[in-house]
Image 1 (cartoon, helix red, strand yellow):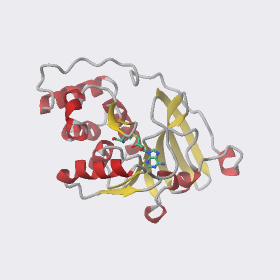
Image 2: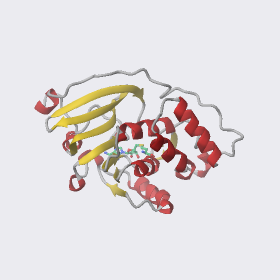
Image 3: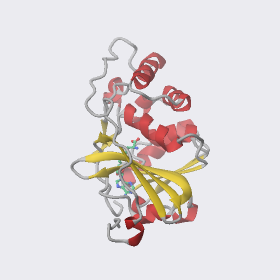
Image 4: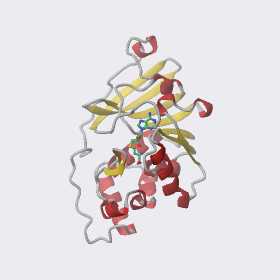
Length: 247
Ligand code: SAH
């Protein structure tokens, strides 16, 4: 299901508040981590310093990025590249987002506070979900590819994160039984935010999503009133597409 600009609630959506210059979101070439002991705490610390240099300011987000071992979420053969600021393949034509994007979206999801209930669409390997769970009260993460859902479960099991629920299903439908959500993080791109998701956002809540198809923009959609959605466009990004159904 996708949203339709002709729907009355869409007409009330006020659009395009700010377009910020992208700060190395897509094309930055990060300094090499060679020689740092590639999967160590030190290489994570170096990654966190680069995130700060790229404009990530939230101490909680930076602390979460320093704690979660990204190398444990990718194939062994890619572990040495886990702390480079780059997306990496996780199989099934999907990728784990680059650390900058994970940090940026987490910071945007948090806004100025601690969201108590967060919905993530697109669990992938589970890394973003683990980071979110460190900064939010309760996190629900949906994945449509069963093999990835199982893989995320296996990756996350050793971390024993009590406030994270993984769901196998079609994220386009949201999770009505756990709604409303204070925040949503959509980890795959769609032309517009699906209506079911908008309707499951709490009044006062916010969704962070890459919107567009060949050209995508990271957007924050705030639900100010039951029927008022305020849309802020931020930097250019590149995500895999949001697909309907499960497999
Ligand atoms: N956050 C992830 C990366 C996400 S990649 C991580 O940290 O690894 C985008 C993911 O969205 C893919 O795993 C893809 O299968 C999933 N996806 C795409 N459409 C979906 C949908 N409708 N519902 C749930 N997941 C979806």
